[in-house]
Image 1 (cartoon, helix red, strand yellow):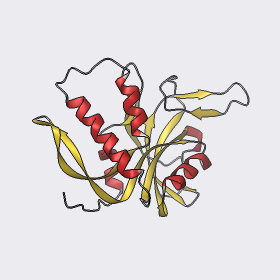
Image 2 (cartoon, rainbow, N blue to C red):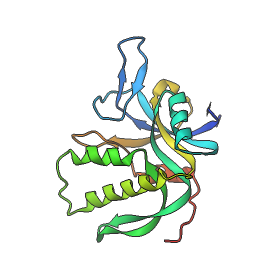
Image 3 (cartoon, rainbow, N blue to C red):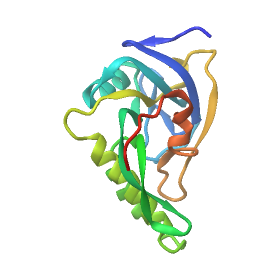
Image 4 (cartoon, rainbow, N blue to C red):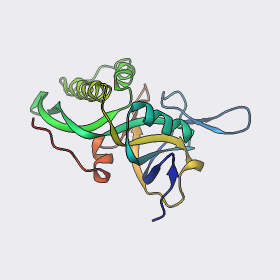
Length: 192
C-alpha cells in the first residue's frame, strides 16, 4: 500500500463520513463537523505521525490537509471511567483516545432530546469529556489523529470505515469510538 504524506503523516485508513459543504466561490469543499449540513464530499482519515506531536501539531496537520481534527490518539494512556451496562458510573480503564474538543461535542449533544437509557449516555459523555481534559494537558503528545477532510484529498487506495452523526444535533462520531482507531496504534499501558 502506498503511503500518502501530509506534513510528515502517513495515511493508513479512511473512515467514511458525510457533512460537507461546497462554498459559493471556487467550488472547493469545506468539511464541517457541526452537523448543519449533511451531504457527501468528506472523509475522516486516520493518520499516524512520523514523530509525536502536541495539539498544535495535530491542528496544523488538519489545516494543512484542508480539514479539521475529529479525534486524537495519545502516545501514552491515562485512566478514565468507562461505563458499562451494569455500572453506568464507570470503572477505571486505560485510554489513549480522545475526541477533539469533546467538551463542545457533549454540549451540542446535550442540546438534543434527553437520553432514556437510565444514565448510560450521560456516563459515556462524561468519559469522552474526561479523555479530552486529559489530552489537552500540557506536555501530552499524540501518535496519530482522525482528520475530517475533502474526499478529493484522500488517497485513492485508502480503506473506508463507518462513522455516523447523532440524531437531531448531528455530532460526528467514529463508529465504535476508540475501537475505530485502536487497530492502527499500540495501546500504552496505564495502571488503573
